[in-house]
Image (cartoon, rainbow, N blue to C red; front, side, top):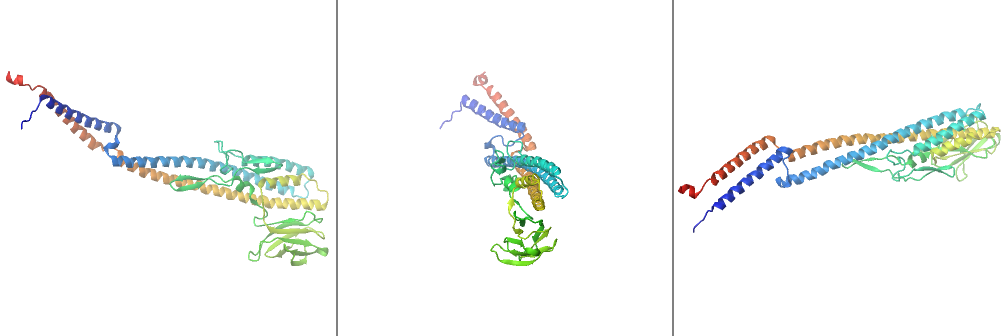
Length: 400
């Protein structure tokens, strides 16, 4: 068998060898220029696939960071708004104490009422606070429009009851701002557990000054009525009309029954009554509006003045409960802000780990790459020299 080696084949092999070495050298040059080991996926398919997954994890951490920044801004603004609400309620409490002074004249009460009207408007504005991006802080997930508005002389809420949960780190969520219904509407009356009030038909000067649960095991959560008869006698009946206790009223002394007690001041008239039962709820706006209505009246009789004082006493209790609610709401927001800080630390730790792994997969070993570049460059030069020498070979030259 004969083998024929042609000049064209030798040329083609030499060219192919040079091109291959040029391609390898160009690839190494790309690696050196970019500082990356993985110029294309074919360099290391397994490492390239792993790196893509890690890139997604890093991008997800960035998205979590953006989520955290947004909710941190909203919670910070909520804190500012609730602080101002708390300050406003503290001022309301001061004004109620002033108005409860028996020496207070009608003009002074009117002046207090005027200030309360301004506070009422300010509270409505705070309840409709925005986050600077067109979303309302206290609207729940329905935060595209103002959640509070006045309709028929009272404030209505058009937001929802949902508190949005925001992911700020892998499998770590924080709560967004509180819905307005939890902050401004569902405020317990009285001391937050029980509440008492005089009957509207009372004609005496009896004042309900205080009450509370003294024995939780004896308190059954029912509603009781304290009724006064002739000669300062009284009786307490439950919701079914059953007499629980009787006695003779002594001014300033507490009347205890069924695990609770009431303290009455002044002089109740025959037929006057007071009720005591589980605390209800009232919105903060109704509390302030009730105060305004009370102070806009002009009592002329002792019974009317006693009714005003009872209303003011009830308002002070409700304001105190509202202030406590604001403190609780701020504490809740503070806990979420602390969780955001913890999430930031977790994201940073995860990012450092991911970037380190990516560096191992992608970053170039400069010493190895430079050595390889020098070797490939030398090999290319050798191939070029061989090709040049081959070009000078000729049968005619040998025959000459």
